[in-house]
Amino acid sequence: MATPKLIVTSEQLRGTTFELTKDELTAGRSDERDICLKDPTVSTLHCKFTKTEKGVMLEDVGSTNGTRVNGAKISAPVLLNTGDTVQIGAFELLYDSEDKTMRMSIHQTQTGININAANTTQTIKAMELSGFTVRKQSSGLTNKLILALVIVLILIFLVLLGFFFLSIQQGPQAGASIQSTLPAMSEIA
Image (cartoon, rainbow, N blue to C red; front, side, top):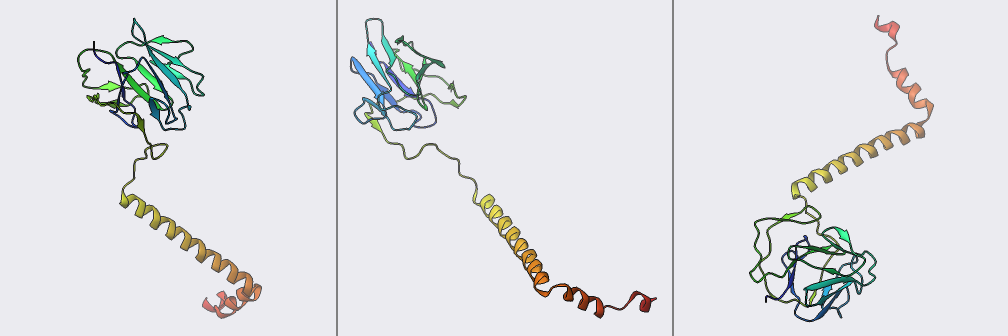
């Protein structure tokens, strides 16, 4: 019989595999867990996996955000089947208990991300995440254009502000002196 495993399918840590080698494994944010997922959406002790005669049972152990199987929040232990999607916080994991390596051309996660299925077999005790989410970086040209636009708008604002203060400082006489230097309409005609 093959060792059951969980394959991460969500964007964070995609392709990482956890082999369920012990009779009982715990998952959570703490380093003390067999499956350590460092993310604020994962509770310190989130859920546990227990091997039975029928297969692997998954149980939520009072986590804040709950544990889901195939999109449904679980409130009692659930027997996992090959192909089930397990959600622990922000992480989605594909359960595989087949003797052969599970291969699929495309797997769609509950969040709608299409990915190529993983084909790894290493056991990983803990994972470190550097941030809450992975952001796509915008191109340098776009950033430069936005910066140039902001600078132009600030300069226009400063020029208008300067004209406003200049007109207040000179008072109504500034308007009169400008009118006195212009030829009268009667003189032009």
